Image (cartoon, rainbow, N blue to C red; front, side, top):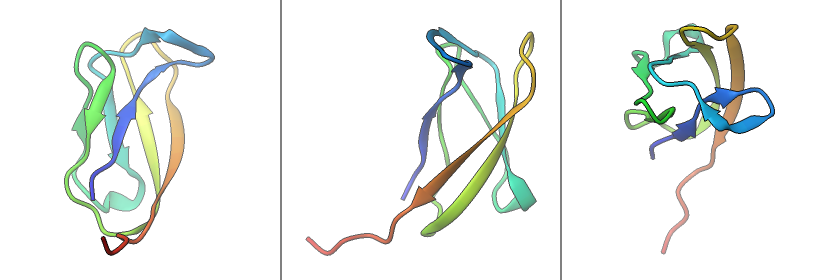
Length: 74
């Protein structure tokens, strides 16, 4: 399972944060970077809860949480 995300200015989804670094809290995975469009894709992660620490040039640091559910049989 992968985590797809979009980093943007708070309350402004039309202002992407390009070149942001998205780091898994606790070092569960290596950090990933957003493209110029503010989008990122994580490496494969097991189910669980994750907190991301986000830093981007020109923006205040932030965090976000995500829950990766177990895969459902098809």
